[in-house]
Length: 125
Image (cartoon, rainbow, N blue to C red):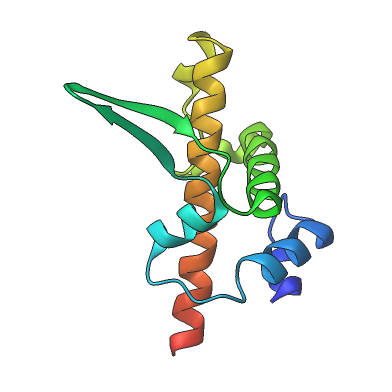
């Protein structure tokens, strides 16, 4: 499994090893549970009539979250980004740094769930 992940563009042996040992050895009911385990799920705040999203919390597996955010930044820098539906759109580039960071974290979550889904389908058949 490590070799399969490392063969993907942008993923090195250390990143693949960390992902396999930390995230892909566990069973998750769905992608939402995996995103929550990695700490890449949003933190809602609700008090009275106020409902807000606080962004990404500090909960979850720090190592998986770190690897996925680094991978998302690396994937966002690839020239072939236009061919993939997962990457951060170019229109975000002119809006500012904060929005771009939020979009990269969202991309990290999508990439993690996509990798899990591919692996999960292979293991079931």
